[in-house]
Length: 168
Image 1: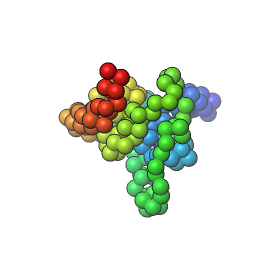
Image 2 (image 1 turned 90 degrees about the vertical axis):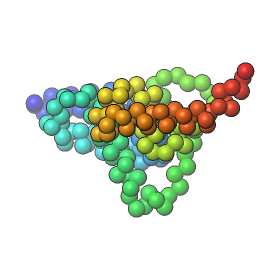
Image 3 (image 1 turned 180 degrees about the vertical axis):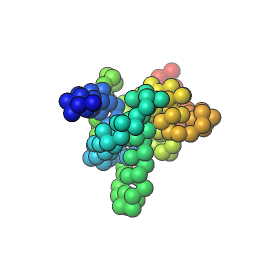
């Protein structure tokens, strides 16, 4: 690949995946500036390792795996354990899909999930990833992804029960 071809590849990747990855990283990390750092780090790692991308998984799966691992590393850092990670939905990066103003109940419920459940929720219901894509991105068995999805769904159902039936 020539330098121009590499540049075109990176520009295309950023154009396609910056917003979805930013939303994913923000919800995992709970901090807008850290999410931006994580996305930049994700693109840097992808750029650096582009020659190793064999195409076994989709570009989306590959980048999601890099982003999730980058967020996990950031969450493990010593200074992160001593910061206020409370997040409000109004700080979320702009969504590509329109959403109803004023009611952030679902977003808050998702953000309150434990990290492993939040990851699968975001990947499956927000990014539309399939089970095989999630399995490759997280590098866990399919049964683990299924278990986490079921547990996340049950937790969300319980958390949103009053909200969901409020209008009936």
